[in-house]
Image (cartoon, rainbow, N blue to C red; front, side, top):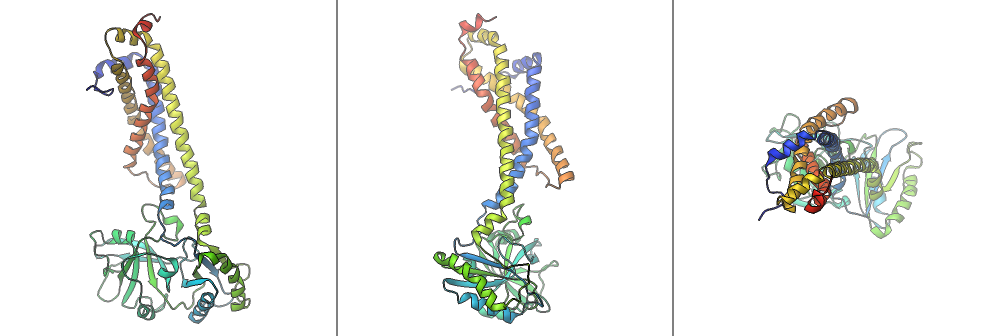
Length: 422
């Protein structure tokens, strides 16, 4: 059975294009410009959108973040941190409290762990150092286990001489496990620092969680959004900033949020730094605020992609329609000589395909050139080469969609009407 896209003789199509150069050149120029803009816009859109679609692994409608606790004088002691934890835990409606140095979707204080696997894979992972974070955040353990009480007790201080006490257990995300251990075997695996694991001091993976996003919001791209590690910490001496994750009964979360400021006032009696009030916010609001700039960028880039695509469709359809109209008599002669509607339709689709390919030959290098300018003047990321065939595929489909209407109208011209045209 013949189809509308059965391969016709290419020679006559090319010969016809060469005899009428203006319209083909306009279509080629439009395709080239659309390709250059659309390929870059789609790539940037994907970078902005991808982290927003990743499951963060945190239980919904239960979490309060208590952050930005800074003493006016001195630094936090472990005794103060634990006393505040117990006071928060005593509030009606509270299910779990975890002191931590890393709060999801907030970057008040950064804690990164440069690690290298035995295979030599290295990464700087976001560190969530705390006590009871798996339960407080509602994370799903998919392999291994959470930290034991003994592991919290023997890890030592978060900073200082006790930071690496020979073997330090860690819980990592599945995404990080796949990156560091591409052949599997993450559970029980050793992770060293920049120099790799050795016999004296290393991290050992005791469990993996399904999801947990980094809190460094500027490092969520290139597939690194879930490069996170949980580190057991119960000693928090000399920290400048303290934070807590408070898990509540979802029906009483607002009640707990209203009670926390009064609790902090009772607990510290004005010792907290003035002018920097504690941040007490539910997780959903914090996530929405943290991604506000990305959402704005997604709307902007999405609009650019839609407008460029729409203009390309309208431009190709208009030029093709005018061009087909100018060849009405020629189409009628072909119909009178026995050409079927399917053959006429296929002719114009193949004609558009050739023009689109010619436009892509110019447009793909232009896309790379525009990306180089964006990298130089706006510090935007390099366009990966795999995005070139994606941009080409979008333009090929766009061209075929745009020409389908004019081509169908051409195929529907009766031979008798066409041959009477001037």
